Image (cartoon, rainbow, N blue to C red; front, side, top):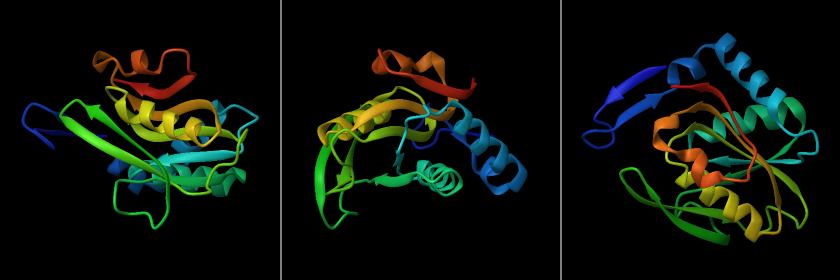
Length: 163
């Protein structure tokens, strides 16, 4: 992991997992470890833009899950739901593609980092608005000092590493 100070804003330390993703053995180890934590009834991965896409695609292919991308505004031709939320350094919005989740479908939310929990909470909200059931939130890295788990209270949250 690489730490990038003052990105995307002064005072923020960005945890960049690109070195992990670019190493084939490290990527395989991370994806396998994430899979070990996913609830066995899971049918679908909701992958958060953009690094969550890498993990979601690998999980989907390796273990035969469907994958749904949760996108930033303006990227989808048909939007079922949209949620705006606060970040540690501003606000953002996520959108769910239309007809991507069927009612009752078991869905795990996947991303690279859990920081303040705003993005993951928004992702869970999108899944549930579509009628899906969130089986858990799985991330590679958690920054506990930022309190992300608090925003996900009552949910199963799995992180491979905490810093």
